[in-house]
Image (cartoon, one colour):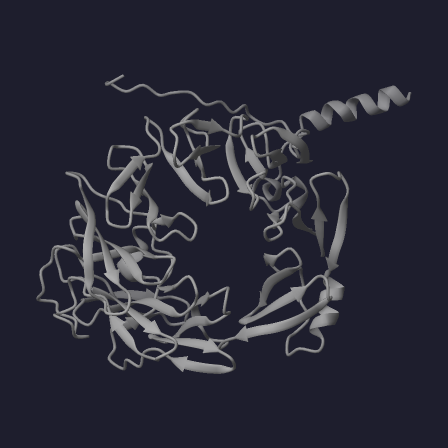
Length: 478
């Protein structure tokens, strides 16, 4: 009798169909498991992650984990500070093995796991936009309206004071977020200088948009450069936090050495992107791209005077040049950096010196470097993800800046998201594929699996789903 009852249920479960809520992701039980905020704890070989309302710690040797901190304890510590209780465990960034940074609204805190104390390190205007926290001094750059400010030691320091409509400072929306631009401010490595975009839209035509958020829709014009018409003009300023003075880089739209924007200037280099500081804060590097997007100059500027030191190299294409990544200096070495470029058809890594000499090409082949992860100065190894093994994959590889040997560190087919420990001896690796969802593994420095931290499980195994397959489509050329 019992067999007769359970057998139909088992068969029914294997052929269950998704409801509308389940198909649209509204049933959390059908989401794949994960280890939120998985990360290395500072320079140590211990790692942490958040589960529910608690922060957990894991070690290389032990399969068990320890509870580091609960939300209730954190809220108790926050009780003496001007902040509301947190409703969920915040996003944390480890500054050291025993300290992490987190924010609640526009207030930033450091929690000390050893002392079990929390302190507020800075805060800014509740209406602030484009917030950029410098993590060594905890200075905050932010915008209010179209002007730029710095919050530091309970003071609000105005960096700009423009009153003309159409002059915008510190905004991420310059160049319409093209070419890897994700922010409008750039702290120097030691937090002494702040570079920022200053955009002039005064001569850009207004385009009418309709605001339907009101009961009676209203016209809301925005600045929008139509094809062939005048575009906005952008320059880069550098604010010195010690002197309170600003200089501007002598980029094409800066007339002579003044602060005047000159729309009549030569139109050959319009876009400024891939802003990179040298580790010693003496120089700042900018990729300057023409409006046709076929000619790039990678320029080196003096950070104190704004003078152009030299153009390190140029890239040209009869189609387009698409600079999306800032230069990556080799640790604290101001003399060498890694540049990503698709100049030969595939995004690859190139090693340059700070005078613009190509030292060597690091990667080469009919495949794409999908993400640069880090350079480890202790070992001289460069870590990156690429699709060398399959066009749809993204696996972890490493190479030495001195040798041509390419080391594959993850074997499983799929899309990997890897974190390398400070010493390079261990790897936290999460990967997905068409059959695996969010499997997390702990690897040694050579890619050997130490143990699985989160086993892949299929929350949809009881459902009757279609089969997924990947196959090539041929066109008339192949």
